[in-house]
Length: 325
Ligand code: BTN
Image 1 (cartoon, rainbow, N blue to C red):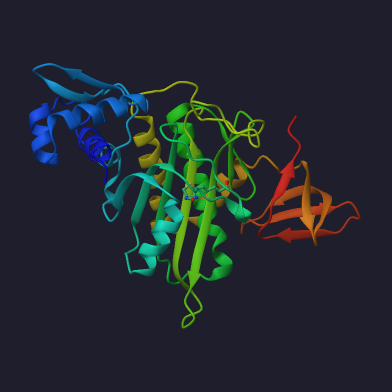
Image 2: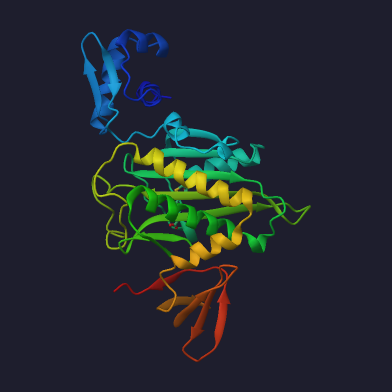
């Protein structure tokens, strides 16, 4: 870990508190000059770091600093089984968590990154994951009794948990584009990637990785050209502690639904927020784009569609596009 990352971790876990250069240098076993250089480099990255002679350094408590302690502050007691690890930079939290799952890490391991260099989206796409403005989180589950065909339930619970947390934090209405894209003000602010490994012995899941990526703010350099017309952010301006509040809000709600098994209530909340029901959609069928009417999202969260020839079908997975008014 670089001195800069170690300094950030230390300051993040004590956000708003002063630390003298001497104390930090001793705890990180580097010179005070190295601490100064690391603090300036963090400032260049956009962190609001106060540096005052005779007092030392502190991370502004008014800024939106993601931290493990900051997330724990908002978590409910039923989340105590979680093991949350915050990383500054990773390729992909889903990929790293898969490695940990293969190595035997338990259910409830959560990886959260400040930035991803190779964030993954559905259908082999990339997920743009710039530093500072997003929340990139993966949760390891070992739902032994869940059958592979029921996996969509986990995505459904995650989508509802994200919507509820976004709504509570921002006061804005969140909508779901089947299966699992979350929209605010008609722009995609969150994507969910669920990946699993099936046990050959039981035919059930060995593990499931639930990856959630949120654009909390507009990226400093804007969204890349390929997504600029479709992507949006939850908040218009930086607000204190929102990333910790959102991370905890999602985990609280997800774990609540997951442990209670109250899937019926969850699927009701999902349907309430569906932005596709009753609208014309286009989807890929046998390699061809076809039009259909999205009639409903059923109890199992399958999308019920009616094709132009009058036939109906229940879709369990896929990628649809909806025309935005
Ligand atoms: C999509 O919109 O297609 C799904 C995007 C999922 C992105 C999240 S960010 C955290 C986790 N790690 C990844 O590499 N992807 C997921």
